[in-house]
Image (cartoon, rainbow, N blue to C red; front, side):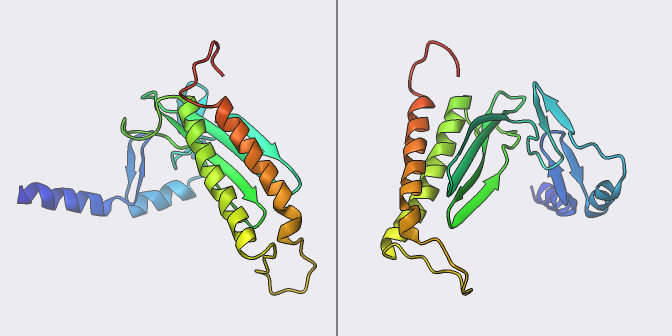
Amino acid sequence: MDVFYKINKTMSKDIHHSCKCTGQNFTFEEWGEYLHSEDKPEIVHQYKDFGFNIFDVCLTPHIKIDWANKVCSFKVTTAQSDNGRWDFGVNYNFWTQGGCCGAAYVDMLKDGYNTEKEAVSEALNSLEEKCQRVIDEIQFRGGDIDDDDSNEPVVSGSSVFQKLKEAMSKIEHYKEVFNPRQLELFNL
């Protein structure tokens, strides 16, 4: 047992980057060479119409939702891996907070989601939490968020409150549309 542990520990110590979708492992030196090579492909693995890069992120996901108003925006994407599991990606901006992550390759059956609807539903739960955090912050501060030291005119929290509520309403609508427990006659 000790020998296996030492070998495994040594092998994992030498690996700098692992690509799940191709099964490649790179040492630090190999990774540097790969990144500097001129002929490296952008898409290293293709499954159906989903193309994944060396970082296991899908570059050709399904765009399931793409919504915006003057203050808020969110986009939900999905990708399926060879094992049939689904993952989601999000890109969002709720006035003072935003972020993004791509739909990734899922290599383990315990990870990801069984259906595309489940993945979208979980993405919407995440977006709802992020939007609610901004609404709560505005309410806590009494409608004024002053996190900027500049003297530039800033749109106050109370003026964007309705736009944030509109975003929450849209998220709730999409949660009904993409409810994974709802039976449907046709696949979305």
